[in-house]
Image 1 (cartoon, rainbow, N blue to C red):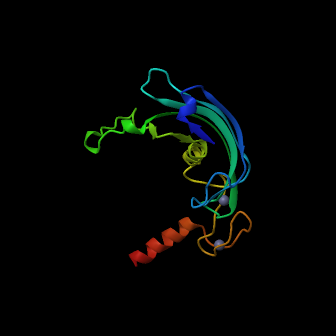
Image 2 (tube, rainbow, N blue to C red):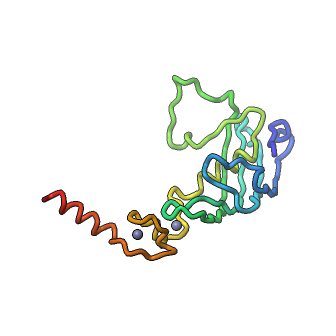
Image 3 (tube, rainbow, N blue to C red):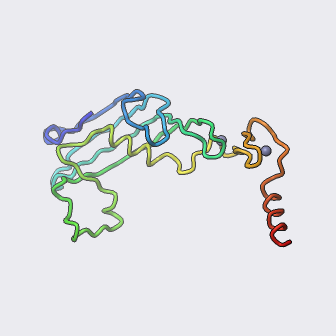
Amino acid sequence: MFLSVKELELRKIGFDKIFEPGQIEFTGEGLEQGSPLHAIGSAELLPESGGQLRVWGSYTVVMGAQCDRCLVRARFPLEADFDLYYRPASDVPEADEVKIDAGEAEIGFYEDGLELEDILREQVLLVLPMQRVCSESCKGICPGCGKNRNETACDCKPEVSDRWSALRNLEL
Ligand SMILES: [Zn+2]
Ligand SMILES: [Zn+2]
């Protein structure tokens, strides 16, 4: 869905849209969309702001990603709000005048408008936890035998004692 500035000059645009898996590109990030993404919100050109555009709303989606510890596919239900501001691309400062302060760093730029799919993609990537684990108690893969310790208990010595014995060997 394209949020066109021409249209925004005339009126505020509201959206309430469902994006089926595949409509927003998530491949290449090791992610897959595990449910329709539902986004509700509005876009508006702020009056007397020199063309500043505001897009805000919320979305829900379930994302699928590999657990960082046990490598099993895990589901990450997301529910998040966003409130974003964009300035006309003609406002992009020249390289030598770029002075980014904390407040300015967040702002984006637009030319003829904004693609809602791009905004949502960015938001999903932002909101996903850096460490993606299937559950806080995930025991992960055993470094000794490679088994998923959530599924099978193995007889390998715990990692900590391995580390100590490695140390002891060094001292010999
Ligand atoms: Zn896991
Ligand atoms: Zn093991």
